[in-house]
Amino acid sequence: MVQALVACQATCDYLDLLSEQPTHDPVANGYRLHDALIVATTPGRAHSDYYLHHSHGEDGGYLRKLVESVREGISSLPLLSLIVEPMRRAAERIAAYQAFNHGDTTGSYEPFERWASSETQPITGLRWWETGAGAGSTLTLLVLIAAAADPSITPTDVPAIENAYFPWIGALHSLLDSLVDHDEDLATGERGLIDCYLSPADAATRMRAIAREALRRAVALPSGRHHALILAAMTSFYICEIHRSASPHAQLVAPGVLDALGCLAAPTMAVLGARRSLRRVSAIGSEPVRAKFFSPPSQYLESQVPDFPLFIAGANEHHASGHEPMPIRSRAPQGAGRPAHRR
Image (cartoon, rainbow, N blue to C red):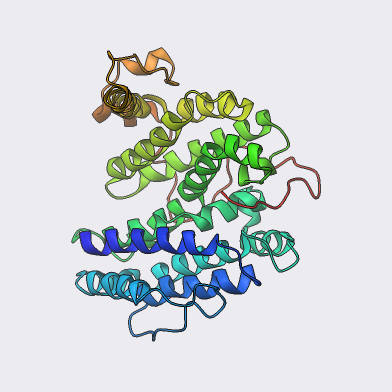
């Protein structure tokens, strides 16, 4: 399992880097490059010319070796048959996201909006870029791989896992990633997913609601505490990265998302904040500087991680396998939001 996870993430990172390089047809290039991920996670599928639309042309076989490493790791998973189809869907969503998220030959992002809109189920209440964000996250794929190594997983558990991570947990993942890049994007004139919101306040309201739904679905899963900790650790990692940002988006989004996670965020924020401080101290060779980062409301800080389900009202009231409405609905006017250039 470890080999499959590491090789899969390395493949995604490498493909992301390649797809950001200039090309005459970004959509065709992005999808053909990411066919490597689809091949890697689809047993029996043949290799293709991954660099067909890329100026690089060849890498000495590096990408194919990554693909084979993923395949080798996946082949040993005891419950591989349970995740083959959802794993394929996750890989294809990532490929489509990476193809459309860099614009088409004219620089237009309308194809991205059309595709993401077609993937959005109205019952979720999500806006198109929020669904697109969920599609672009690698978390769904990685969690499915891990699930196939868990002997306690049943066939009915897999759809619940897929529906919790796509779009909910994955959307929060990609949106927070875009938030981390926001200052840099503003400086370079690029657009990200976070810019699709009408305002920083709109982003904060929506992302808080997404975080709450993500947590509700996470804790309702088999081994829900583990999935909730993954969610908390991922969220805390990104928010620790923006704790010094003066961006109105960061200042409004971070507290709301942490509040949605409640007491679960306190330990992960403390650990990651301390780690960041130690890293700074090591880099500058000075006395420790107390890290300043967003923290949950004080009433959550007294709670221990094992007790967090007590603070999640109704966490197990609904079955996790279906798409249910978020607490809020999209109130954006027709055409609101702009196609994103990157996360």
